[in-house]
Image (cartoon, rainbow, N blue to C red):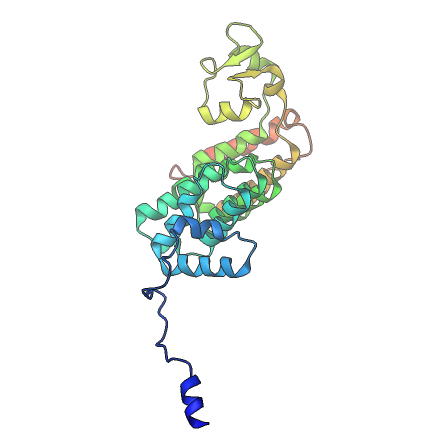
Length: 280
């Protein structure tokens, strides 16, 4: 009986190391495939993929970031890739790599799927937008509420990320054009304002050109931004006002009213921005 026990005893095997493969083991899949497996319906595959990406260190993080540029990647895969980035030490990466991660997240803010844009906004809120703060701030105009809320939370918590240029962008979302302004810009009198006739920046032109046909119609010029967007913009402005000038009373603005009826309030906010220190 003792002899049988000895014969049937399983063969001893040393500890398994995450970075060591035995000769008969299949090769590990490419990191890009592991990123895709983060959204697998099989829990074991998700766990194994996550483990391999984390064992790869910065290479795993960059694989997740670069996956965001994969053509025709399913929305669920992109969301899981960004969830992985949120839980990663992006700020510990080399500066160029950390910048690339944020660049790719900012690009995802224009994805047609709302869940992808919301995940990108959430990632930039958690990780910080870095050099992409203007692109992140402009996501305040997104129709997806979760995208806008991430922007509100970040700039409310970190008002130092909004300088004078960002404040003017915010104010632009509250402003609606008037007939007189439209007439002055429409130099050829054809009822539309072309890019060459528009004297402000390209970003504001793109925001006003709602159907992206390269021309701003009279209706687009006079129509205010959606009240939900203006409400979120106003929340950021109130928070920044509280942080930057706590001894002053903020200008009252009703985001539910047509922006064209709020010119006095908008003028007041413009004066507040103009009065801030020049290094803002």
